[in-house]
Length: 222
View (cartoon, one colour):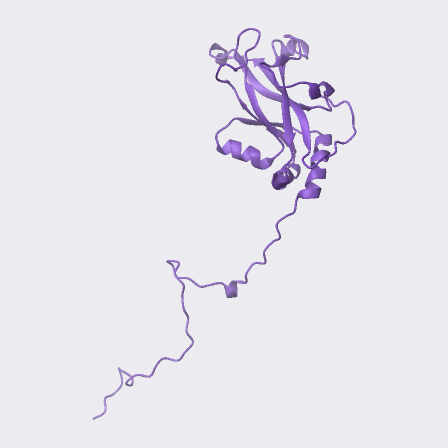
C-alpha cells in the first residue's frame, strides 16, 4: 500500500492514537499441500487513516472487506489471490511502554505487529462470500514488548514494515517520554565478596597464628 501524503504524523493529546486497518492476503496453495489445504492466509499490510482517510468512519464489522478482484492485482501471476481489509484497529501509545517503542524504532526495520488467529471461533466468526472461514486479527501494536508477550503466550504474531511517517510519529513520542535507565557503576572485583565452590562466603584472616605449646614436632625438654 502506498501513502498518499508525506506530511509527518504528530502525537496529539495525552495519549496519541492512530486508526489502522489490517490487510490479509488469501492465496492459493500449490503443489502436494494443495490436496489438504486449498488456500493460505498471510499478513499483507497495515494501513493507517492517513493512507485511507475513510478508515476514520469505519468500524470493525462482522467480516472483512474484499479490496481487489479474484484475479489479483498483478494479473495472471497472482491468479486467485485476493486481499481483505479488516478496519477498526486503534493503535495507542502508552508512556509506560516507551521502552517497547524505542526497541522497535532502533531495530533494523521498525514495524507493526499483528496478533491474529487463523480460525475464529463462535457465532461471530467471519466468513467469506464462498463460506470459507476467515482469519481474525485481534490487535495491532508498535510495541516490541507487546509482541514478545504474545509470542510467549504461543499466539500467532506477524509483522509488516512501518512507514517513515509512522516512525516519525512514534519517534516524537519516544523522544518525549523515554528515559533510559542509568547504567550502574560496576563494583570493582577487589571489593566483591569471595565465595567457596559452594557459594558460601570465605573469611580471610591476616592475624598471626596463636602460639601453642611449642612445636609439636620439636624436641621435648627433660
